[in-house]
Length: 266
Length: 306
Image (tube, rainbow over all chains, first blue to last red; front, side, top):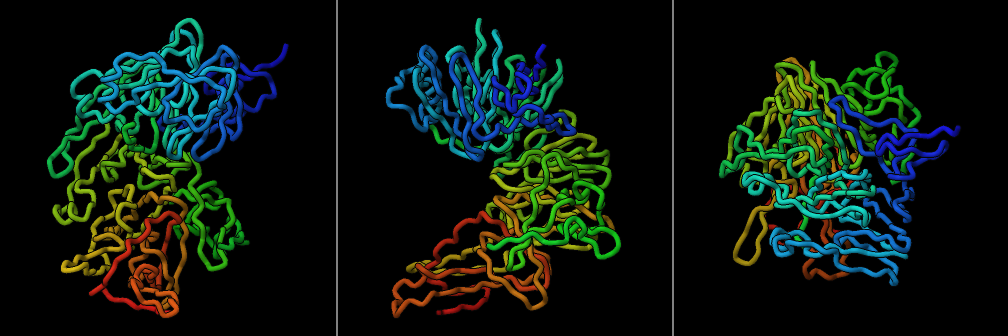
């Protein structure tokens, strides 16, 4: 019986001898880097690594501001924010992904239009500052919440919506915007690629376990993780504005980025 | 820059105890990384033909010990520094570098004086202090390197504003007016300009304890030791830190203009002259200096018209 290699990032099985995971692109046979405090570095994808989703492939190119180049087969499609598109084959059709609440999104500075590109053909996407591409493989019936403007591309098997951050304090003070992007799978697995600014770290919180994260550093979380604003007992600035942190409570994964990048509203 | 590998390898020794070539403190020759500053031990020095030593990046997950506490540098693009603080020990930092903190870690505001001066200069008004036992993590906001500078008792460093990431309790922090400034005239109005910023940070290890200073340096960092009387011209925006013994002055350089003098400031270069003795460090990413038009007064300096 052939030996299989388990990817330490997405836990998918790979044929023996594989250098990178066929499902998420993470290097295989390299030890996970985990800090003493329990944060695990997201795997640095090797330049030009390829991985499969549905009947299509994705290749990640570059190391400073990586590009995700998607080769779509007929019948497959991906969604993305239109301003992340770097180039595309002329023949690839693009359309508007059906979304509700466009006016609210527009008011919140989020892209009004999420674009859908369909195969066959290629489309490439990238963001606007140094960082790394993080691949989140979603098994059926999973939900992840992603900070606004961090999502690079998602497969058509993932349902996209957005979630208003609950609680007035979070909306006003949390600093993470009024909306989170929510990605949900139902019957089929799916894939979401994020662009994290700087380096990306992930930690899995146990039930009830809490950690405080700078709102600008928050990147993603399982929907089972609750996020609320917590005011620290100190004041900063001339106007004595309170300092707020995002209190994350497990169970589930939390991803953070080491560099906060301010986005101009589209 | 012509770069060659030094031949000293990992030794950095003077025949006795191993001295880390980057932090200049007795270290552990058998370790992979210097426990005092995090710099790799098992690498050759990379020195340019002009004498600049390239500071090697702190390896991913390298640890630095200070007192009974330690920190760990994680990541390579925009490294974060995770602190594990022992009871009764702490670090202070600017609040905008805070990345995450343990739910039980004690955080407090740590206000330094001259509130309005600092606000006017665009410097952080309020520092934060995290004290142990607990965990806290900090990161900068631009791709670059984290630099560990352990400070022996009584030693001081001058650091450009906004480069400071964190310092241990044993490090005293103050600031002083920048040693170089200009007064420029524009029509009927004049104003002061500060090529290094209005203030420079001063960090000194107080008492008889060594301290740890951590800087975030966008780009790469290069270090050089200037002998007494030796000087070098650097871009003001490229300076990161110097020993307190290093002298600062301005130098204006005008290329040969073939008789054209109209708006000569358009092609003038403004340099910062650093004079030894002492260590100086520059970074490869720097802000372009403004084109100051008519300089009517300055902190003093020289000029060269070619």
